[in-house]
Length: 505
Image (cartoon, rainbow, N blue to C red; front, top):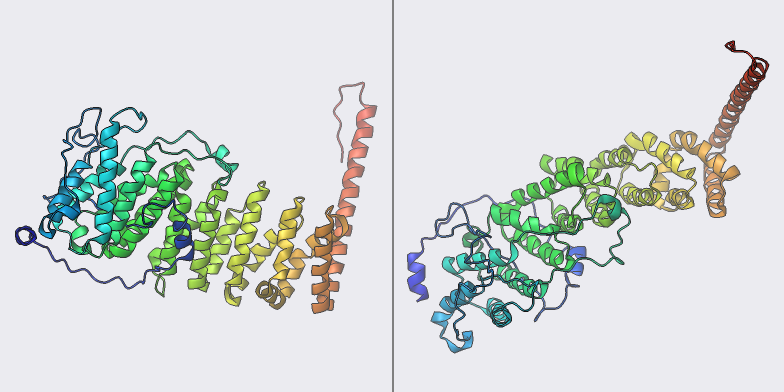
């Protein structure tokens, strides 16, 4: 039977040039977070597929089709199908198709009283399909892939209805403490995701055939699901998209471009999306595998998509993943450090101290990968901002900025450029040493002053003299201003009884 099916299917062998960039398959962050997913049967699985526009064999899935969206009446009869163990090997793929078609009916899980028997039958069938995909040693045919993609599309591709939550709420949203919105159909969806994941990873699913169904349309629908409120679903989606990127090289540029578009819309329009952290985690693995020299496309992605992601108020929800991606770029090509640092300065927060702490932490990671030529180009605007942080009334911001001198590489860069840097930050150090209210900041400031004094006493004394001269000028200006206001008040008091205008030279 398999030979008959294979003889009828014309296989198209398309030649595509191999992508020169290597793909980082070992991402510690991605694999560690994936391992924390809720256990299902044997634990891990692979990805789904979709129909190609050019493939007449696979018409597009219509989510409104009554053959798939069940509104109370079952259009597919739940006949008693045998187990895979009870049929010969030649009939297993035909049985697989029958079971997949049976699982294409979607039920309403918001009402547990509707179709309980059919739901349980479908659940058991999905579990059996997952086991079959994991253990199968026979190549999946094109017709099998077609029906499988239809079933997965019918079950997963749906309209998400997220809870209303504006960006102001997201600022204070704590992922660890807040209770996320859980999809009532998740116990069912989890099996479909697991089945999909196993299918994608299966060596029996030939990528050359599967790409006809796992096409651009399918990738876009998959990316739409990243806005799901349920973190368990986003975790599966993250692993699935990662597998798709690794298996289907022809889709890699499109996947990167589509993720870019999500970031653009998030930054420039909505500032609302639930899956930014997961998408950045995938990109961290992708960036890790970029080949050198970096393509211009990748540099534009850094400057136009990643750096502007520092702007939204809800940065805390994805900053860890964003910082990892940024640092990966700088480690790949240290010449990008100047662009990254200037980008951070462009979006530096003014009144948000918690966000400022995140910027300082990321800045330290970037500076660790920065070399002398790039540091020299951006050190003036950089240390003007650091000087403002040193004088921050929020003690954690001032303390975090002073911790830069505990980093050996950053301190080495500062030492080599002290003649430029010390005059910029000396007034901030002097004011902290005299007036800052926090004792820890005061002590750290004195330590930094001592480092500069021991390193170059002559430069230190020169900066101190300049500071004292500027301070004397400011006091003189302030005294003159106060004298002018006092004189104005005296004249106004004398003229208070008349309407005569007061003229002050």
